[in-house]
Every structure is written in C-alpha cells, then in structure tokens.
Length: 427
Image (cartoon, rainbow, N blue to C red; front, side):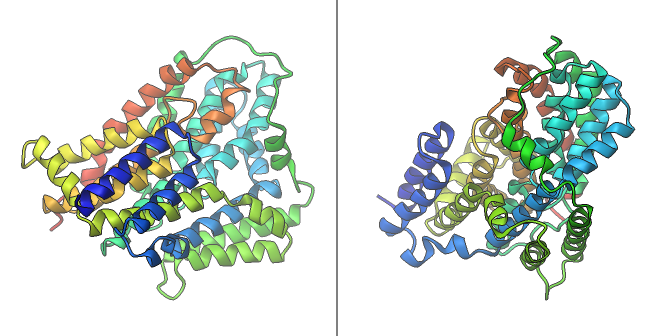
C-alpha cells in the first residue's frame, strides 16, 4: 500500500472522529499525527513539531489577551456602553448587539465575547420587555462574523495563513481578511435586521432566565478596577498596531506573547487565569494537524485528492468552480465539526488543487477559511451558538431557519468578492 493511500486512510479516520467527536478533538488530531509517525509516513521528529510552531505561540498569546478583556470587565463595559447608546428598539438593539460583538470578537475569542455580552443583553431585554430569544442568536452570529475581520479573530484565519506559509507562499496579512470580513459582517447585520428576525422564535421568555454562571462571573470579574481595564485596552491596541505593521524583527507571535506577559506582570489577570484562558483544545488540535498536513504533502496524498477532484470537475475546471466546491464542503463540515478542524483538514487539499491548475491558492484558502466561520445553521457549529442555546430557549430548527439564510448570504458575497480581491491569476 502506497504512502499516499495510508495517509488518506488515516485522514479519513481523523475526519470521521472529528465529525462524530467520539474521541476528543485534540486527541484525534494528535493521535493522527502519532499514527503517521508510527507507520513511517513522516519522521518521528515531526510528529510533535506542531507544538513548536510559531502559530501555536500566536494562538496562546491572543487567548491570554482575550482572557484579560473578560477578567478585567473591559469586554462587558464596552458592550454595555455601546448597546445602551443604540436604545432598546428591537432593530436598534439587534444592530448594536451585533456591531459590538463583531468588533470585540475581531481581536479576541468569539466564545468569550458571547459569554461576556450575554448577561448584558438579557438584562437590557428584560428592561425593554423584548424576548431574549430575539437578541441572543444575533449576538452569537455577530461574534462569529466579526472573527473573520482580522488574522487573529478566529482560528481558521490563522490556520489558512499558516498553511500558505508552510507551503512556501505569501501568507495573509493581519487586516487582509477585512476585505471580506467587513462586507460579510455588514450583510449579516442587515440580513438579521430585515429577514432573519422574522425567522427567530417569538415567544416571550421568563425574566429569571438562567445564565451560565461561569460566563457571567467571568464577564463581571475585575470590573471594579478601571486601571486594569485601561492597561488591557492599551496593551490590546499596542499588540494590534504591532501586528498590523508586520515588522520582520517583531513578528505576530512575539507581539502576542509580549502583550500577554505585560498583562500578567501588571496583574490584569493572574498567572493561573492566563493559563486557563488558553483554549488548549485549539492548541493541540492545530499542533496535531500540522504533521498531518505535512504528510499530505510529502506522501503525495494531497496531489492525489487534487487530481481526483479536478477529474470529477471535468479535468480542467475553472478555479472559481473549485473555490465554490471547497467553500460548500468547508461550510458543510463546519456545521457539525470544529471550524479549526475543517480548515486544517481542507487547507492542504485546497493548496494542492489550486497549484495543479496553475492558479494562486490565496483565493481558495480564503474561501475555505471564511466558509469554516459560517457555522450558523446548527447549535453545535460553533461555541457561541451553543452558549446561547439554553438562555435563548432555542430549538435545533431555530438555527436551521435563521442561520441557513445567513450562510447563503455569506456564500454569495464570498464568491463575488474573493476572486476580485485575490485573483486566481495575478498579473
């Protein structure tokens, strides 16, 4: 049996376990890397090489900075201030909620953003006598859309950029995602205000709605110390500026880690809070998928899949058709499995297909990453959706009804904008 076929069998098992989650995601990814090492597909020294990857360090640093926003109460304070400014009409509150969620989640965890703003939104809904079910799903969707705007807004963006770098290609810049992220966020807000809201449940919920106690506590933690809020805000701004400048002597991961160290040293959060603020599942999931991506390349498995897909699409498909197919595949996978996993799974395949057509892989990778963030049609597609499920008293079909239309809107806009910003055959 060839190395390519063995790699594809391991990949198929990993994909199945990702979808079913019979085994925890991180263990599946690391187990896949370990299996490829034991089977001799990749050198044993490469099995855990993902843990030393600079992208993993970037993840960790930004998780700590995001945690500080919530522990100091900065995220909640921003939410309260802006949302109260827009008033308590249903459309005004929905627009304000989604804008605030999008802005905060563009530079921090969308899960943490949703957790921090959820008690605020429920409280305002109670005062305004608006059912919380009318606002909590838009909150989760806004956080998901906002994550697309910057490189560090959501793991798929970093993974797509990392895949390009690993393949020896020019990675995406910090704000490059804004070309598609901002239009999608604006379109998503308009969709929810004028179409999506009619698909949300209308029943009035009781005022004593149960909120995740841990999320509420995290949102309120440290909010009595304005000094720590200002330090966190200044640090975040400094890190974002450093990343935007993209200085070769001060790369992204160094900016993120420096910011995290400053916040711990200034006691904006404790060392323990910094450790617990890191999403270790994402860290190990990414670290495990890096060697698998390497195996896909070295064994020829990626090229094998690319050749098969190109053959199925007619031997010489247009890059646009490939982008559409991979967008649909990534979007379909992400409704039921981790967006990090679906991006890591498809990124090397997308690069191989694009290169086999002689096209620039940037557009294909961008489509895969954006599609992975369009997890709006199920309650399990992304943590923010799951977080508002109970407090919003939603059913599975509520997400299908309101979220499917949003997915289609994102698909249409992406297919139009992505090839314009990232041409398949740049001059």
